[in-house]
Length: 401
Image (tube, rainbow, N blue to C red):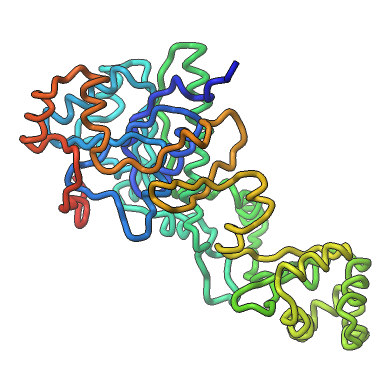
């Protein structure tokens, strides 16, 4: 007998925007949760970068004005028949809507509500807007990255966003399990700026005890050399090589077959570290005569730790990922998207759906979930409370409610 997806009995009202929240709810939707994406009828969700298309698959889209009494009442009617609410506005937004947890639990005492503010619901920074890039900057991660002491760098992927998303997924599943056993709802707060801190705990401890501050060291390593990324023959294609033992170093010398590497100044880790820049140049001259794929295979075959630094098109063509059917192709939009990295009983990929357009599910949800008649739905749309189509104005372009 075919097994149902793990979360097919979980209904989530998704009020999240940008990246962290939508990525988390997308993950839950991939496992069969009924995700109702709540959008403002005046706010377009498509973009040239296709960010929303990537993050909002397997979700329905309901376009309602929460800043109106009728729209708020529709939302509260959905609260009565839902399991989870997730939002990532600034704290004042849900207060202004009168949709805080204290308001929500009066309607459904068993609801699980998760807020994902940038800097928490309280404190001097709480009302500041936040993106993953600003959150990771305040977390201290950027102070540990870069190639020069006076030029810190961000991760390039707004690390705080995906970490917060995965934190949210695990927390929602944990408390959903708790509710299934006890019947108790709860309120959860996951702050964007706090999430990355769990990844640098040892450095926080070291600094608090001894004042230690990790130096900026680029791709090099305190205990290994060579340990870096090296250019290959094709433009912007690189290979990482990490020599951790003297045996690996001897093997690398034999593979490169360049007598310059037999110089005594490269004979130990300490001396190699002293002459690291010169060593990098010698190895780079050699790596640039190969493609990253061919060189990776050669070095690995000779037991030298190495791996290509895959760029986007290499990932799409990667034989390992494709053999595991990692990607998903939506023929209706003609694009390939990243799949689901968490193993388990997912919704079958043939049943995955691309992003719903703004208001695409409004009529179905109001009719089938809440019992509204077509006439009532038309009246709500005529009054601007809901939308079943796309509008050009964006109320969030310069301010939030």
